[in-house]
Every structure is written in C-alpha cells, then in structure tokens.
Length: 542
Image (cartoon, rainbow, N blue to C red):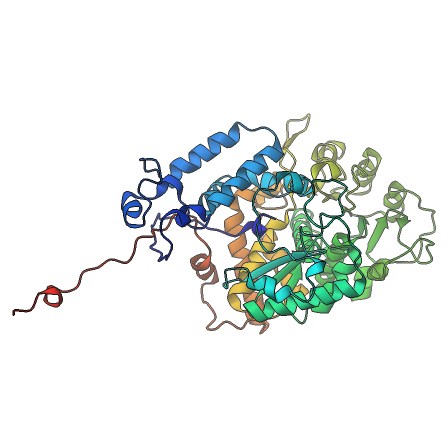
C-alpha cells in the first residue's frame, strides 16, 4: 500500500543536495527517482544531455506542487483521484511525496484507507506500471533468480501478503480484469515452503537485518507464520500487530480522559479474526504490566463472531488462536450482539468484523446506559464496513462516548452546538515509526513489546486540546513528527532491552532519525566540479 507510506520528512531549510548519477539524457526523465520534470536547471539540462528534451521553461517544485493540487481539485471521484495521484508517483517520486506530506489529511484517505481498498478490487482495470516484485506459486524453486532481477541492492524493508501479493491474491476475484493467475490450488505445505524459501532468499540477498512486513493473510495463516518467523527473522504482521498498537494507543488516550486504568475495563469484540486477536493479545500484555496475571487479563475480554458469542462448549467451530478468550458461558442466553452488551456490561466495544453497521442504535444506547463514558471503536474499513458512524456514536450518547474509527469521518455537531472531531485509528500512525526504529538501530527480531512501546509513544502525543475535541489520536497533519517521536521511543526500548545492534547508541534519537529519513527536496545531478591550483595546470616551458 503506497509502498507502505514511505516516511519522508522535508527539512526546514531548503537545500539542494548534490547527488552523483551515471545516468544522462532521457533516462534521467524516465526514472521516477531522478525525474524533476521542468525543475531541471539550465545547467543540468546542458551538462546532462537534457537540453531540448524539455520545454524551454524552468520551474520550482513549489510551482509543480501547486499545479498538481489544482488538477487534483478538479477530480471528484475517489478512484480517479487515486489513479491520478499514483500516476504522479510513477513519474516523479519527490513531487508525489512532497504533495502528499503537505496535504496529508486530504490525501491519506485517497492513497490509503478507504480508497486503496477499492483500488485493489479494480487493480486489473487501473494497472499502469508495475511496482515491486511479483512472485507466484508457479515460481517455486526459482525465487532467488526473481529477486536477482530487482536492480536495487539497498533494500531495507520488504512487504508480502497472502499468496505473494497481487500476482496471485487478486486471482481469486471473479472480475475478468484482475491481473494474476486465473486458477490456484495451494496446499498448506506449498505455502509453507514458498514462504520459508522466500524469507531465506530475501535474507541471503539483502542481509539479516532486512525488515519483512507481511499482511492481508487469512486468520490461520497470519498467526501461524507470525509464530513461526517472529523469533527467527526481523518481521512483523501489520494486520495483527500494527492494528493492535493503534487500537491500544486509542485506549490509552481514553484512559487519560476517564482516569480509569486499563486493567479495570471489560472489552467486547465484534469479530474474532486476526485484528481482534492481535488487539486482545496486546491489551493483555498492557494489563500484565499493571500487575495482574495473563489468565485474569484474558477473562476481561470477550469476543462475538459470525456464529455468536465465543464460549466453552459452543457447537460452532473455535479456532485455536481464539481459545484464550473462550470463557464459561454466561447464565443468560445470548443470541445477538445487543444481548452480549446487556449481559456482559462491557466498558468498551471494539468492532473489527468488517460486516457493516452492527453497532446498532440499540447497542449504542445500551453502551450509553451502562457507562458514563462508553468506549466505542468502529475500526472496520472501508467506510461502508464501519460498525457505526461517528454521528450515531456521538449523538446517541449525547457526546459522552470516546469514539475511534478505522476510516475517516467528518466532524459531528450536536444540537447543543458542541463539535467533535472523531479520531481515525490508522495503522499509518504505527508502522512508519516502528520500521524506522527497527531498520536504523539494527534489530534482528521484533517482539510484541515493541508494539506496546509504540502504542504508549503514540498515545502520549495526543494533546489535552485534541482530547477535548474528541480525538484519541494526534492530528494526521503531524504524522511526520509523530512517526519520528514514536521511532525514538521504540529505539529507547530496544537499546534498554539489549535488542539493538547499531552502536554507538544515538544520544538524541529524534535528531538522528530526522537526519536519516528521506527528503522530498530535489537534488542536483550536476557532477562535482572544482578547480586545481594554477601551478598544477601551468604548461611546462619547453
């Protein structure tokens, strides 16, 4: 997704750094990494063989960004906006990230949740230019040769998903426009072998410290692969661990508002898949830090899936990963989610089922009746899959709820004039900071405590003013600063617990990370030109 939202930070002072390149002429304009469009200077055009290949006008990146923004404003359809924006990324990476960072709140819903989901469904119809490496099950035994085709050896992070992202994952769609294999029959052994070989070959080619992030797996495969590889490779699963850290950060922020420790809450999940289990496991880890046992913490968490409440002796199937949250059945019969709310009396309901508006008005009213400050997290996305709207949550609880969603919602104005700004529990708050820290401090494996540290770091950056507005997360406009601060806090944890292998340890970690992140300012491609002393160039007397 958007190359995992590459973390880029523009410096306060505009500088034009000189970068040596062997490319000259048209290849400079064809590569999105080096293309500057009409921002190539006259000197660059003349020396690098570009003169005459561009219109006789020289622009700044600011002018290009302004034109980009103006053209984007003429487009109303989100998918068309996505195609236009990603087209810029395919031609000029620096300009793309410059505009993205300058307009992050407006553009993140286009390049990420919720529009990116629609883009995935329409991938075969909107395909323009390949990005990354495509590996299919038919390539088993030849993965290294495919990785060798990737031209860049400086790879610090790789991403993979179920059935090797894009190449096969879209073949299961009925749409004839989907790109990939049209038939597939993957045995568990085939998938295990390919996954293991892929990781081993990636490590051989790019090094032991290469971060491998994987997502979009089915429930069983996600946990199976995480347990298999977590202590062997530098890897994490964003759907399980990233989502968990974002949700827990929201709960930590809610804790500041109601002044109630997390160990005193009761949680009811709508959905019992990888997102729910990941969040629950991290909540248990946070509770254990307060002094209660793991078993006691697990008893405070209930789950409700498509078959109903998870309880011991249920006739419907229960996954092994769900067993820690399967408890003795309540005395009252529970058939609906509303029954579960009324019987279990949760302080927080967390929706991750992706099944639409199942936090009904009756459910929200019940939460408002049971709790003075109910916690309502409708984390499913895209927007139409959210368990409820922000307007319903705030209106039905008369503004008393603490609300977060997986997709963005507009501000809500109550009849009494109060305005609430709902917070979006977006994984983009977590994975850039975690990845930045992991890559730069030389981590070999990533424990769940890293995501607990990230959740704490994110929550502490929410201001009192933002909490008063109803936000449980910092404004997305501050996401660059948030990511660097989160990375610094994660790095502190890693060094403290002897999990970092990059020495010496940076004293000012935020400053260190800022010096390392990618910049969006254009670089000069002029060769390094300098004079020799006159004596060295003086012709000898004959």
